[in-house]
Length: 354
View 1: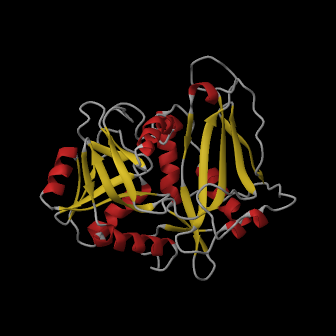
View 2: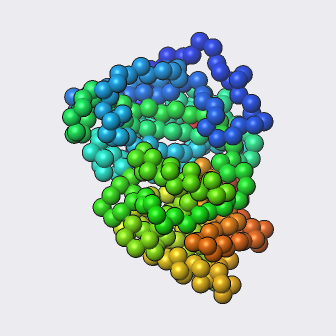
View 3: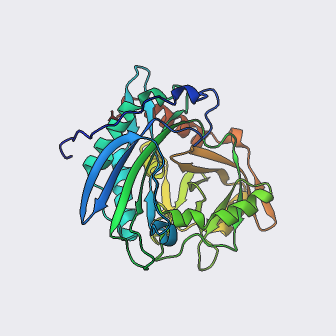
């Protein structure tokens, strides 16, 4: 850990706190008063500051608008029962952002900007942290290209920002998932393991078509055979089959390495479950459903923590699940939510105090 730095702050003149309906937060509707900003120019990070959340005022030739050189992260801060503020595993997000940066030919963001800047920003806007269960301050760090050029190349300048806002649960109900066979999210050698905006843009048409059929999200298959399970649009996917926790592995570089995924797999092992990270075919899932060994299906990610799947449609075959019987994932969801609110004493050292 590098020595903490103090970042200059320009405070907002009038807070937006009174505009927040804390009884109906939703997700991504409200934003806190301030943001962290830093520029990468001539090979150096400069102009690091915290200032009011505001318009950035850039020009039409900004290269990110044309060639999508942009990456982001998502994480959360919670208040515990004593009012202390903790961020869940922020160094893992910092590492992943920089892995994404490497894949997208972008510069690394230094730890003192990402971690120390985040802490100072959260301390400044701590009044926006909600106190309800499964409510938090959502944190969105992101980096994008700022060179004004139409040349197809990596940018020579970048802007890094962190914005925050109070959020409630991402999914209000268990999800209905449609297995996507026509479109492809990621292929080996592509950008599937990077948290880059283009991956999400490529998923929007499929998601829109799924919603027209009454489904919430799609479950992506591999790009070559459309046979092996990858991930859901906004989260990793896990299955409980015959008491084993089974999830697609990360070997092909087509699946995002989720911080929640990583945490859950470690906790499941700790609690004595057999955990298998491997290729998972959709045919295996259908067969397990038919023979009664498929006990639970759930997604996991920062936004949702754990989201149960109540229906999974593959071709014309619809698999329905009794969410109330999914006790393994429900117990783990409660444990992880309680952990984030510091109710377990942080045995794994996952909570970074602000």
